[in-house]
Length: 216
Image (cartoon, rainbow, N blue to C red; front, side, top):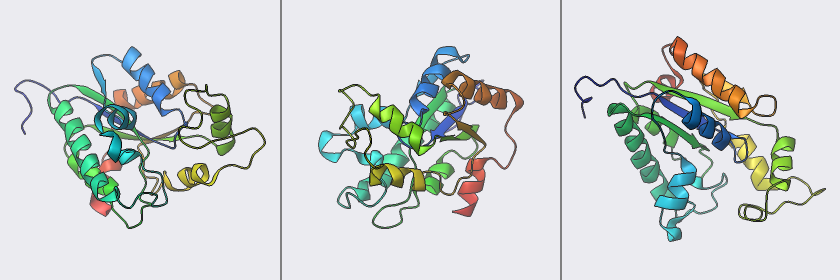
């Protein structure tokens, strides 16, 4: 699909990190404060509003091969979503999206490389959102009843549950990023400002996605 005549492609910012690492808060700042239209096409909206209930969590599957019956759909879900991200960019719309990319399934699916290739030729920034396990646990314990237990139950003083540890171990592999931020030491506004400054300077080539696409 060609760019619309006279329209430059929109910027793409992909945030990757574990659940409760602070990705959604950064998305909110970008949508509220960055210049231009920023569309959120991330995992939360896709799973909760788009994926049929019987196929959830879809692209939100946890590391460890928890649902082999759903895994054949996951690459197609990801491909469709990344193709949509690319289409929005080609229409001159900026896109910010948060994901928890990992390849810890019952069999390797190599999803990240396929997604990177779908963004070929577009200005795409890949940001690693890091947060230590102890801070993630504090955030989970501070959540309201509407969110507690929806993913994995946590209680004060309990050992860190295995699914939470698994996310931390797998979500940043291979760890190729254009930028990394740590939400335990920077506010969502501070992380967003780092992203804004990098976008203003321009991405260096090969970008993270270009490297991932060529190496996978």
